[in-house]
Length: 158
Image 1: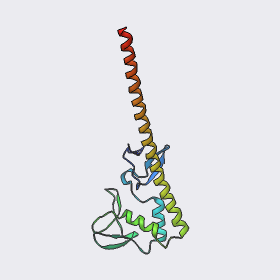
Image 2: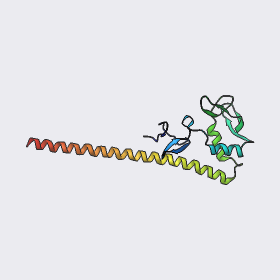
Image 3: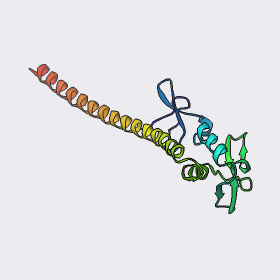
Image 4: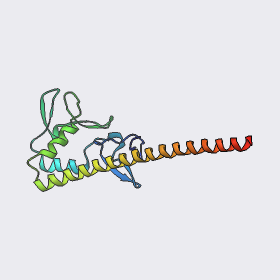
């Protein structure tokens, strides 16, 4: 089993942007599960507005944040304006490695991202563990039912 979004029921990946929704994990934006968080976007526009934040490996072109395209009908952002490749993960990688960000801000941003990943991982581990416990309980129930039926069969035969 896998951790699922409480809003859209799709699986939540470690790279998805999540939030707590009614005490359960959910995508921040179900249509765009791997979109940049509002905090990431803010940091990029404040600290990285004047330099390249992503390179499109398909086109070989470099882009600043303001040059990236979007497809609002398809709910995609951070696209290469030429070939429409999704550059979100490259932009995120830039953010977490950019020397322009003050080191404390960069560290705190990394900590937030890692905390979200740990939450998804631990939720998955809890689901996996509960699945094992359920299977063990089912097996025990099956064995006990067999023992009961055997005892009932002996009793009926006497």
